[in-house]
Amino acid sequence: MIRVVLPQHLRTLAGLDAEVSLDVDAPVTAGRVLDALEARHPMLKGTIREYGTGQRRAYMRFFACEEDWSHAGMDAELPAAVAEGKEPLLIVGAIAGG
Amino acid sequence: MSRVRVLVGTKKGAFILNSDGTRKDWKVNGPFFAGWEIYHVKGSPVDPNRIYASQSSSWSGQVMQRSDDGGATWAAVGNKFAYEGVPGTHQWYDGTPHPWEFKRVWHLEPSLTDADTVYAGVEDAALFKSTDGGANWEEMAGLRGYGAGQDTHAPAWQPGAGGMCLHTIILDPSNAERMYIAISAAGAFRTDDGGKNWKPINKGLVSPFMPDPKAEVGHCVHHLAMHGSRPEVLFMQKHWDVMRSDDAGDSWHEVSGNLPTDFGFAIDVHAHEPETIYVAPIKSDSEHFPLDGKLQVWRSKTGGNEWEALTKGLPQQDCYVNVLRDAMAVDKLDTCGVYFGTTGGQVYASADAGENWAPIVRDLPAVLSVEVQTL
Image (cartoon, rainbow over all chains, first blue to last red; front, top):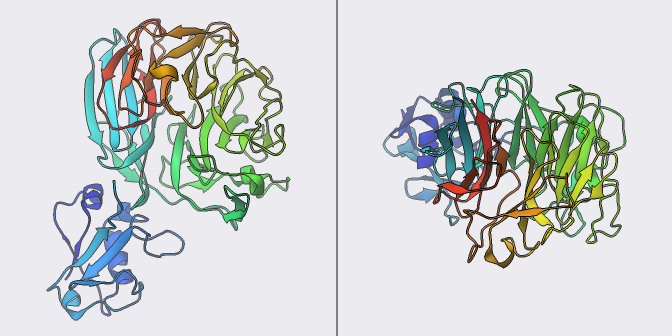
């Protein structure tokens, strides 16, 4: 199971009170994790990645295993610890004031 | 006794304010969608339990919400707003071409006849329509010149200070094929065929900041208002100037009269007196607060030109808030109630058509919009 931690405002939107566990077939990429996340919680469509381009929204960041995966691309394979469920994929709102 | 429900959108959530017909005691519910910008919340005139809300943030973009029980519970609906065809470019602030990019929904206008049909005015400026309660949205692309074969002015549109937003949608209750919209900074537009074709309706507007102050498009129209009993009469709060049209926007004339400043954003019409209009004058385009620190609503009972200040109960010193374009509304009770919200987080109400005011609530986040349902 892949573990995903969402920012508070998206947890509220999706009605979640904790991290999400998802079944994702290998290879585990950010794009495939988001496919599974949006399938289970359709209200999250468009909030993490853009409609149309499918790209990460500018103020959303991806972190895993203490590394920044924001710029790795949606098709980059995430660390094994994420694929094995030992570490979560952290989806974080960028620090942008306010 | 009838009651009222005031729908308030703020920078950090939505609030619903309820009172009976006396409009003295209020119950404040919220925040809904806490932490998100709520540009607009509006109920269906067909089914007042059906309410639509525009929820957005710079981080997570646009979310649309719908309630079917008067705001007690909400569910996210469709949020995919895709421009028709190749979006093209509009003018940037410096006059250079800039790609059309969806940013947010500014205004929601539920249909007068069908609770599942709702229009959305968005930034970058375009008009969208849903006929399934917000699940799916389709651009009415004729406004931007697509699909109808008419000339398009869209490449000449440019953003106002708040962005290039379609912020006003008015449906003609006497003609289902006619509607009006307004864009900052492009101007006002009208369709007479249900949205296939649109024409700019800006004749008579004068905007000295433009290379051609009387150009057909490019005017920074801040808001439009109409009384349902006389749909050919329109009132406009422009960047500067309060304007009036008696021919469905084909021509406009200024009715600023004795207003102390004719800059402002909000304008509305009394529910039962189509010649009684309200504005909230703001000092200037660079100083977005009331003149001399005195918060005043000005009322004209003559359809413009002759105005009186309404001040009882409003702060008359040291007040430096703004009243945004969608932040004024009226109810339909026998003695028309008038409401407005401020960027300081106050929502003021008058239960006697503006003679006396009192705050419903004082300390909300900055108010972006106010709508009223008379139940």
